Length: 281
Image 1: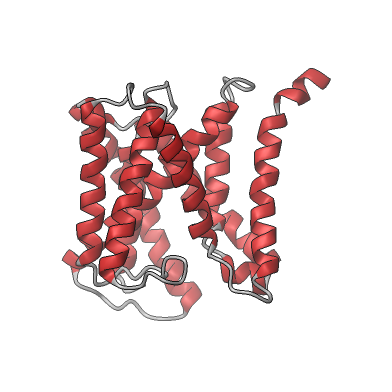
Image 2: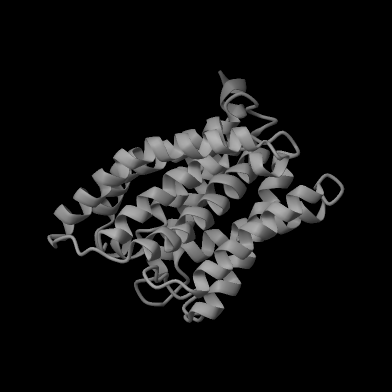
């Protein structure tokens, strides 16, 4: 029994560290203005990705660099011309589209390289475009879209109900393009790099369970990092509401990422935000 519990030591320590970050940040926010949770966890992930890339230069292939740079350019250019997507200022400082474009494009490229370095080590999430597996890439996209569309419709109705406001249709082209921002950035950072880094930490002690436990922690971080203000005002509401959102919109992209690849999770996430932006939420 003791040996079995010992196997979960690393996982429990990671979980404790994540919970402490949430708690400490929330306590500090009562009297100070600390960085948002998304900034904190993105910084941690990017730092881990940079270290991993530095020690994995020989294992990274030309296609990996091209794929990562391509994702960074898509995000950077898309952010520069974004009209419907309006992210929080980065660390409360970077506000304009140009600065956001540079930061978001750069961090996406670094996170993608980190995820690809993990993939080359046998990581649980694959990005088939980097392996030039275009059929798997296309199938992953289609499956992500097919599963994502019903959830996207549900999301719009839920936002309309909770917000108590009618649908206000927006420019369809802007919705299609701007949805790439959260769709690519958050999936690359959290479902590719962060999940992969956690998997690296768990793979020796829990080789079979590591992918799904890493997926669980990525769901918790990615989902609850959106609740900075709610944690401060009503922590129990944040926990309960966040759990529902995690089950409905956190589990599906995580399963897709682990089973069908990064592109499938991106497609699922993208169609959620296309519907949201199109409906004016």
